[in-house]
Each structure stands twice: as C-alpha cells, then as structure tokens.
Amino acid sequence: MDIVVLFAVGLAFVIMSIKIYPIVREKFVDLIATNIREPKGVAGRIVRFMLGKGNAYLENEVVEHLNIQPNHKVLEVGFGTGIGIRAALKKIENGHGRVYGIDISEQMVTCAMRDFQKAVERQRLEIHLGSVMDLPFQDNLFDSVFHTNCYYFWPDLEQGIAELKRVMKPGALMITGVMYEKLKEAADKGFMRYGPHWRPAKYMEKLEEGGFMNVTMETVKKASGPSYEIILASKAIKE
Image 1 (cartoon, rainbow, N blue to C red):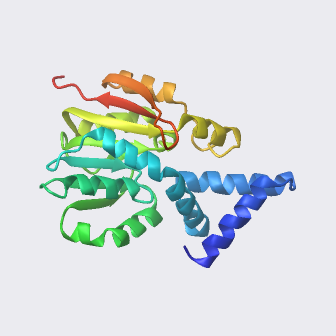
Image 2: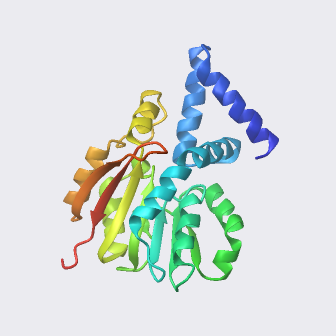
C-alpha cells in the first residue's frame, strides 16, 4: 500500500472516531458511500484497501460453499479486489475450467488485469468491465455464480437477477455472501445510501419472483472467524 493510501486510511479512522463538524463528516460519508458502489481515484484506492481487508474471509468462504469442480465455468460479479477470483482459480487449476469476472469499476478492472496477468494469458481467466444489467456472456454458460456485498448497488434488482439466470446453466448454483450485522452497521452510518435495497429479504423475494429455485439464507458460525450469511439460489433444471 502506498503512502497516500496509508495516510488517507488513517485520516478516515480519525474522522469517523471523533466529533467533528457535521458537514465535514457528511462529505466524508458520502465520498466513501459513492466509492463503495464504484471505486474511483484516490478515494477508490482507499476503499479498495478497506474492502480487501474486510471481504477476504467472506469471499474465500463463499467459494468453498460453491463446490467448484476443476472443469467448471465460474462467474464472479463485482469482483472488487480479486480475492474471490484468486480462490476460484485455485479450484480449477487441475482441470480445464475457466473463471470469469465482471465489475463496473474501471479501477478494479485495471488492478485485476495487472494482478492476474498470467491467468488471463493462459486463458484461465476473463476479466470484463461491465454491469450485471447487461452481461456480455452467452446463455446457459456458467456452472456456478457468486458475488459478495454487491447486489445492493444494482440499479434494477429484477434486471440483474434475470441476466444472471440467463447465463447460468440449468441446475447451476448461485451463492451470495453477506455479513448482515456489519451490513446493518454500515447502513446505520450512512454508507449504504447508494445501495437502497441492501436488505437480504428484498433480494430473496426478487430471486423467487425471477424464477430461481430453493432460495434460502443460512447463517454460518465457525469456531474462528466472524459469522456470515450465504444466500443460495438455483436455476431450475427444466423451465
């Protein structure tokens, strides 16, 4: 991490931990909220660092729940810092599978292309700049799909869900990872102002309305590590 980001992260903690002028805090909260949705510039680099530290455990856990096989085609939506991509690549390294990632942040895509250059060159990974609203993939392509801390910011939940269902193979599984308690805390602080439909219940309702099967949410608690939630949804084998 470079000195600019290090200084900025330290400043962020100071701003959030002491009583300061409301207008300063409001501008800071809005800046972070904007860059949680789509990281850009220096603020985006700060958020990338913060998300990387906070999301690592959840991303790795979600990939474990997917039961990815070596020949699977796997999609991550909103890959952010690339932790989930790295975990998924390990699952296919002994087969002929391929991992695909899509993100709306040009900054995140640039970083991923740099960090995963070898995997891209070996055609084990495809990185795309784009939106879940209009996925650049053919129908019935993916064996599994996952995303964490992502659906809150989709402009249209119904459209995003329809697109994901379109590109999934019949019977394919999608897992959504969230840490509900931390999510609620972030919302209470104003960081979710650009993610109005962050509540899992609304998302699950839209999944069912969109034709997904076996939509359930499980809370996972382990001896070590924080608790988290996974939302499972499958595409019907026959429609």
